[in-house]
Image 1 (spheres, helix red, strand yellow):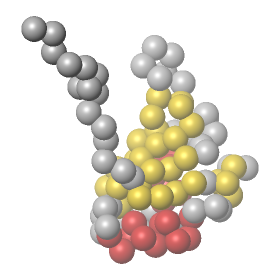
Image 2: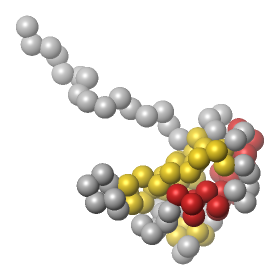
Image 3: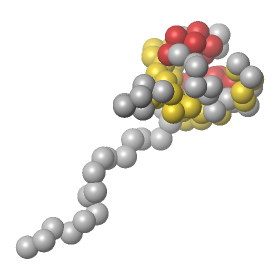
Image 4: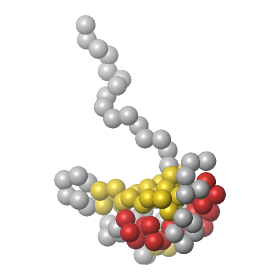
Length: 94
């Protein structure tokens, strides 16, 4: 299992520190990042948390998924690998 978790349904006011503190209740957190729009800096409503161990990641999924966090029910799942950016499906013109 991956140690990186997707965390969705976040309030726009949630900070990286809020996320880290909440997840540290179930295990050691390596990093916590709320994803933001580049131009405005406003939260997109989701983020990623990396736990120190795979066991900690599974414990976070089991105990925090669907639980209330600042009035919203969190969605916590294993993060999927990121997709490459750009349009790689276009055929090259000769």
